Every structure is written in structure tokens, then in C-alpha cells.
Length: 136
Image (cartoon, rainbow, N blue to C red):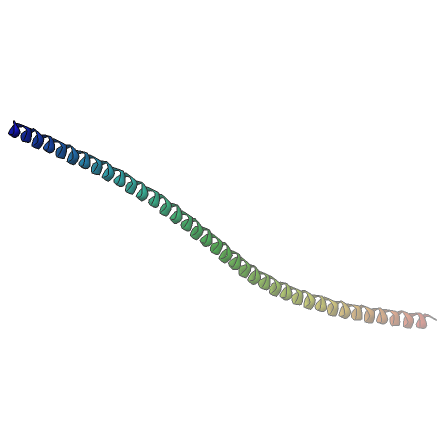
């Protein structure tokens, strides 16, 4: 009876130990699964955060590149306009000088024609006087 009691006690002890180990193993498995899910979620969250940060930096970089390109284009356009303006001023000045020279030449020619006409009129007038004087 004593042996049977000890056997049952040993068996019960073994069953309890087994159940305890099984429960402990299940709790460890659940805890491990929970930690794994938490770790995976942390990785997903950190990845999303890094991706958002990276996209924001990329947008900022692209915006700065666009600003730099626009500034460079504006500077280049301004330089081209200044060069064109300088060229047009030079051409206008050249045209003005040529036009002034042409007007001076026309004035000189007009003056010469005026003197020639005046001289011819004086000669005709003198000849007319001489003829009138001869007729008298």
C-alpha cells in the first residue's frame, strides 16, 4: 500500500512537473511570439519613419535643386539680356553716327547746290543787267 501510494505520489509529482514544464513552455512560446510581433512591428514602424524622413529629405533636395536651377537660369537670362542690350546700344550708336554723318553730307551738298544756284542767278542777273544796259 505504501509502495502504491509512493508510486501514485511519484506519478502525480511527475504529471504536475510535466504540466508545469508544458505550461512554462507554452508561456515562453507565447511570450516569444509576442516579442517577435512587437519586434517586427517596431521594424515596420522604424522603416516607415525612415522612409518618410528620406522622402522629405529628397523633396527638400529636389526643391533646392529646382531653386538653384531657376536662379542659374535667371542669372544666365539677365547676362544674355545685358549683352543684347549692350549690342543694341552699340548698333544704335553706330546708326546714329552714320545718320548724323549722312545728314552732314546732305547739308554740305545742299549748301554747295545753294551756292551754285546763287552764283548762276547772280550771273544771269548780271547778264540781264548788262543786256538791259546795252539796250538803253
